[in-house]
Image (tube, rainbow, N blue to C red; front, side, top):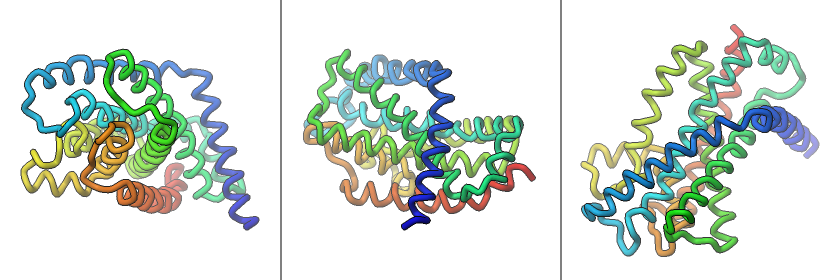
Length: 259
């Protein structure tokens, strides 16, 4: 019990340090609001007129809103690794690694901080949805579930980003690989169209994509009558399992950043 409490205390200390940076310069988070506005206001409005995408009893904009929230979470978290490389270059990583904090606590703390960044994106998406009169659920239980999804999804993709940073080690390589990964992760998911429209090979890829499970959970929680390919239990279980695996891998790779 004492070991677990010590692990959590050190993780929260790392998260607090990361969040201080966010509060000092929050402009990056708010600048990312431009992308979901464009997706919902332009792409969503156009495809709502086409009516060629089966979305059940909900409008296409409502169907799309959870997917755009998942996209915002992905795009905010996936470039988290670039900040870790900057910290390595500034000598911050070396100081953290010589501290008595477990490597897993360092990774877990950064994931918690990323989850908090994701919550800002959730607030932005809700504000956009209200401004565009998109019908989404506002009951407290559903909102709590959405926030939990966002935190977990942010933690998954930021930890994945940290693993990439530990492997490539340079900002230039990371930026290139980050650009290569984000768009396939987004389009090979059910964020803007249901899996039933995909060819079989792409559907198989989408089922192995963690973003699909994040979208499923968000869609069931945000949209009245919204249905996902997987249940909430399955979606949370997959995201949780992926996160645990990523934390273990990232904790092992983290010291290699300074080699």
